[in-house]
Length: 151
Image 1 (cartoon, rainbow, N blue to C red):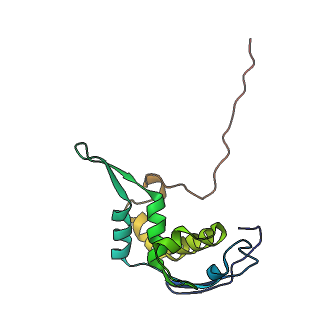
Image 2: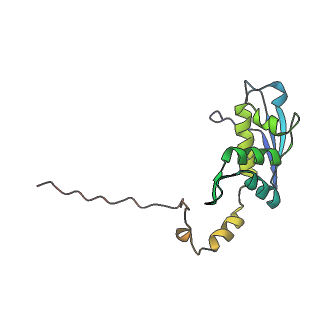
Image 3: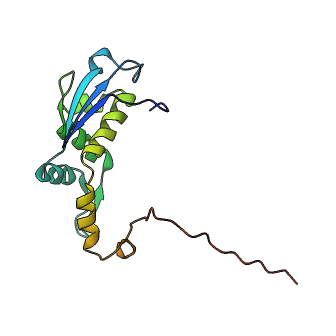
């Protein structure tokens, strides 16, 4: 996405209207330009996309690979409710990269946890520092470095 280039979007609760213009996707086929309606997916749709994205590597050891390409394809396929062309898996796979990136970003945005959902989740652990893998965006004190002279 070009710097300072904003997608014309109208956001309502759980739904985003995105309009893709020639300026935003200069090399895209004409049929891919236009309005896309992206809707937050249901719990069941999310579970189905997650399941479709799992690839069994070793049945005996129960090793599973999570294929993010398939996951994002499924997310885009499920969440886009209206498109300027027929919307199916082939359409998703053949999107112009400028359009695909924008739609993927909007799908991630519409499905992001709300502030309340994040607070509910973090509340299970007591605090942010108790949450494994959470990167705090709070203030960080600079590391004090002491220097000693070599003798």
